[in-house]
Image 1 (cartoon, rainbow, N blue to C red):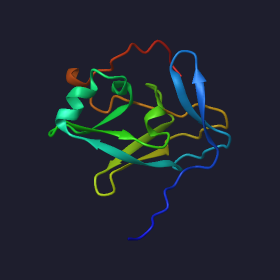
Image 2 (tube, rainbow, N blue to C red; image 1 turned 120 degrees about the vertical axis):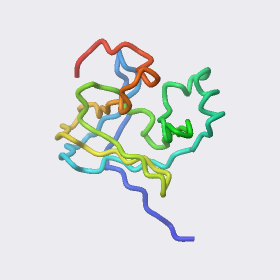
Image 3 (tube, helix red, strand yellow; image 1 turned 45 degrees about the vertical axis):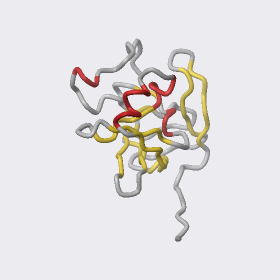
Image 4 (cartoon, helix red, strand yellow; image 1 turned 135 degrees about the horizontal axis):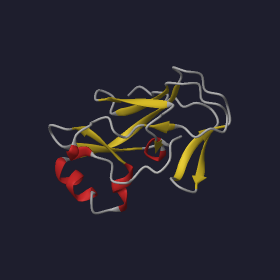
Length: 136
């Protein structure tokens, strides 16, 4: 079996945000289009996805296949990136490798929180479960 190197920007760290809880930042500047992190995921079945809504993990999962109603928990820092309607990062789901790849869509300065938009699906079924009270 071949060993595969997982990529991650050097210097990522966890921050404590008073309004959003734990988040992720970097000690280094991250240029636009840079890969921030490729996170392996733990895949959850449709049944598991229904159960997760009644657990603390509800705030940390990603919808994976909306037709099959599956989801995933990202390892690494993946499930700790916070939400913003004005994100500085985005992500793609990779079915083949079962990873989520996070990348910068704006320059991210050292110390700035890395933020993604949780609302990739703009339907009532997939509304945010919290009220966003700040613009970043």
